[in-house]
Length: 214
Image (tube, rainbow, N blue to C red; front, side, top):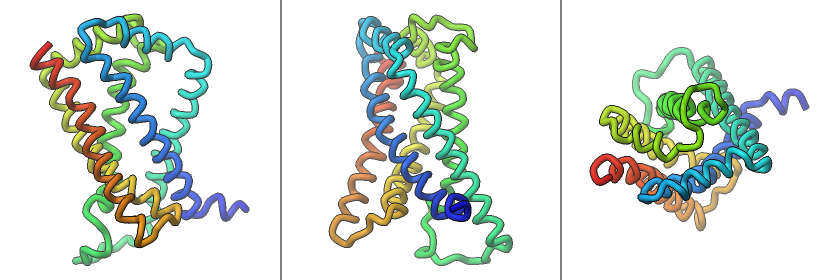
């Protein structure tokens, strides 16, 4: 049992489930963030207040944090194991052996982690009272940040990288879980590609409209 829990296969399975959970969360979070496009701050602030005070949501936050930590931890461990298993890099690797995005998943994941840390400092840590800010007006805080050109550019670049990360992660998760078949695998790849484009684009629309229109 201990060898199973410590195996690379187990880590990949746990990482796959955690990744799929986070993928579903991104849709819910996007739905909430779209309220930022309203001229009335009420709906977004009320939703944010509900999420900050509802005990069920607080439990969900713990699950979400666990999903983040598991996904990051296993991703780093698996990458280190891969590096240690092949300390001498091949001079040339066949393109069919490993895709470009698979090869650089650890790096795109690292950039996304930096973005998440900044995002937590700007919002989540404010809600927890660890960072100074108006936790009753996250709408105003978000609008202030999206008026900063440097932050907007960084946000958009992070979303672009997130799209690449999601495209490979979506397909890789189903492959890890053994859900490969000549009939429905092309459908999974299509859904993954569509998701990796539509969801980051949905997030990107928000700062662009706030910066150029609001």
